[in-house]
Length: 239
Ligand code: C5P
Image 1: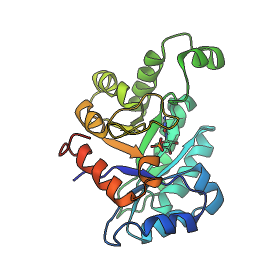
Image 2: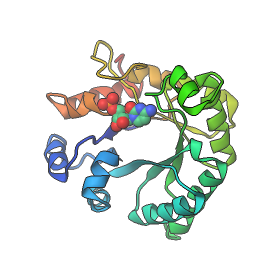
Image 3: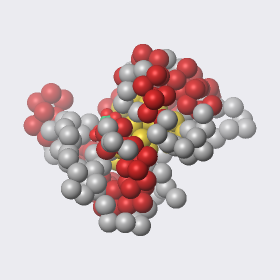
Image 4: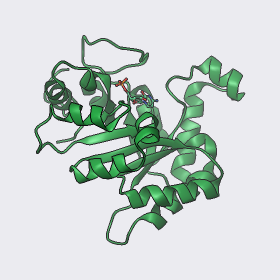
């Protein structure tokens, strides 16, 4: 059964430890560690989560010169992360270097971590993209362009809105992962997300992974919410 990835948007290990007590100890989770947590707790947070039996998507969105990104990725591979990412805006050479770094850092017995590219952040509107980045095309076209560059650089996929999955899948050859945040159960609040889809819809659209934060982390009963989202994501219920 596919597991939704839980965004551990907390700022300390103790908050995570408290949160994880809601889950049975035997429930192996796929969790996302972002900048907020990583920059406060450091690499130890990843090794701790891995030792506890969870898979880790390290969402640091690297964007720097190719050599720097390559070396950073060597280190992240050694940490044993299962998936990580870069900004496609860093360019094809940077994405190739990131992939190379991950391969170099992965021990022979292990599988290289999955590498995704962030296309346009879902917090960026088309007007902002045009003004701030001087990309004078549609947001959709920019996202497709970045997805194609990521595929050409050999990356495994992209982080994108579920609403962009169909067009991305048409534009690049498979297999190509589309990982999508902005997921809410039917009739749930939206928080600050603007373009949301239900887990069931994300499944139908063809998202390969969904990332869910507040609907689980802020729930009264996080495990119950997790199971509801997981069932809907696997097409078993209507949520
Ligand atoms: O709480 P919520 O489900 O909205 O959390 C979504 C998670 O996915 C957050 O960690 C957020 O930073 C991340 N994310 C996102 N949109 C993107 C990329 C990442 O919401 N385009």
